[in-house]
Length: 369
Image (tube, rainbow, N blue to C red):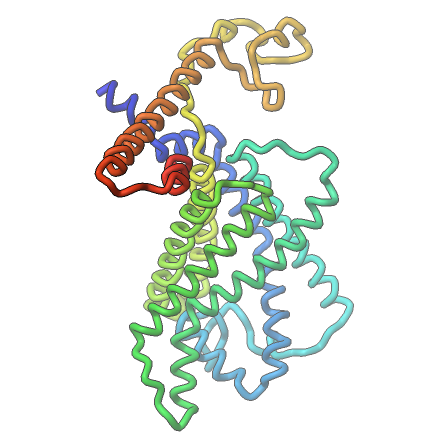
C-alpha cells in the first residue's frame, strides 16, 4: 500500500491536486465567487444596459427575443404576466442620464474586481511572485481583460444557448425551410462554444496572469476545461427549462452562484495541472520549534528569523521536508528518464530495421515527455 501511495504521489494528477490544496485554491475559488456574488448586481446592470442598445436598435424583434430567451432561461424576463428577474420596460428604455453614467462606472468597477481576484488566484497556484512596480499596469490589464472576457462570455453564451432559438426563429420567418436537424445544430453550437471558451481560457492565462506555459500543456488543459465547461453550461440550460416559472428567478440566482464557484475550482485545478509542479513532501508531524514561544517566524523574536522558512509567506519548513522534496523530485525525474530511455530504445530498434527516424521528431517527443 505504501508503494502504491508513493507512486501515486509522483503522478501528475496527484501533484496538481497537492498544489491545489497547498495553495488553498478552494478558498481562492470561494473568494472569487463571493466577489462575483456581491458584484452581480453591477454586472447584470451592465448586461441590461448593453441589451438596451441592441433592443432600441431593433424594437420590432424585442418581444420575440424576450419569449425566446424565456424558452431557455425560464423566469429571466417578465413576459405575459409571468414573474421574472428583469422587467422589459427597464431594458427597452433608451434614456441616458448622469445616474446611468454612475451606474455604468460602478458596474465596470465591479467586473474589474472579479477579474483582479481571478488574476491573483491564478498567479498564486502557479507560484508566480508579484512584480514590483506593476500596480497601474495590473489595473490597465484588468480593465482590458474585463472587456475581453465580457464580450467573449456573451458570445459564448449566445453560441451555446441561443443557436437553436435563432434557427427556429429563422425557420418561422423565412419562406424556405432550413434543412438543419436539432442534433446537428446542438453539435455545432457545442463545438463553436468549446473552441471559443478554450481560446478565452488560454488568453486569460497568457495575458491576464502572464503565465508562459508550454504550448502543449496549455492547449491540452484549456481545451479539456473549455469543452467540459461548455457541456456543463448546455446541460444546465436544458435542466433549467424544466423549472416552474414561479421558482425560476431563485433557481437562476442559485445556478449562477454555483456555476461561478464550480468553474473557478475547475479553472484553478486546470492551472495546477498545466503548472505540472514537482512532488510536494508530506508535512512533518512535529516541528522542533512547535513547542516554543513564539512558534512562528517573527521580528519580535530575532532568533526565529534563522529558522528555515519562506520569506514571502513566513511558512516554516524543516530540513527533513526539504530533503524529502528533493528525493521526490529525483524520483519524478528518473521516471521520466526511464520513459525517455524506452522511447530511445524503440527508436534504435526502428532504425536498425531499415526505416530511419528523423532526429528532430524524436527529440520533440522526448522534450514533450
